[in-house]
Image (cartoon, rainbow, N blue to C red):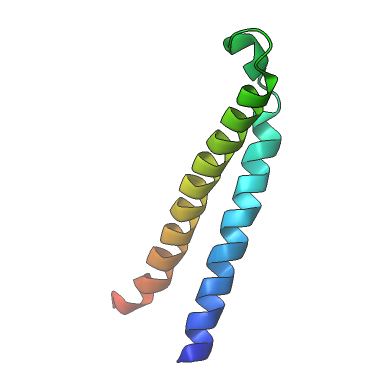
Length: 77
């Protein structure tokens, strides 16, 4: 029982980190410096980091929820 719980926690952490990294990589294509006031490069980088965390978490939760729901389909019959 605890092994299954540990594997679920590991899968969740890996999924979150993976999708946050992917989101950060994709958000680098946007120019946040042009959206903010001039000479606020540090703030634009922090904004990009926070957006990557939020977007990566949401995408990760979607895929984990989808994985759980598809695994529970076997109990339908």
